[in-house]
Length: 184
Image (cartoon, rainbow, N blue to C red; front, side, top):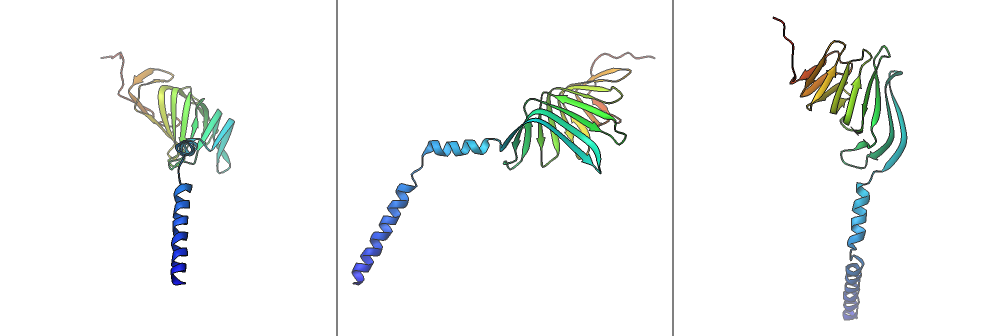
């Protein structure tokens, strides 16, 4: 009787192990499909018009024809492949306008990476032209280390970077280049 119980247990363990062995055979194509879907956005939105408020006051307005939501990633972000139009409002409701061909908003750092034909213009018509510009939403600061052209009412300045508050009150063109008229 004891031999018979041992034989049943032994056969049951072997049958269970064989079932697991054959049930766990992987299909590489199915695994690759699962991996691809993990790299896809969790959401795609069309005609985005998001308004940000601060203490009941409109602070920013982001408009874009398309947004991909990658909040499923460890470092989550939103991608705007068709560009954005971003309005930044100060406390007097004056509007700074920023446009770009492409943008990424990094959710954890509140940083917006603007790329391709970036133009930023203040209510005073001071205008920055760049191929890439970052906007730190927390510090309300604009910056880049790539070539820029900055136009104000009185002059045009070219440089190898830019650093400024969002209203261009503390604007600084870095690595100024070009020809200058000097009076002695």
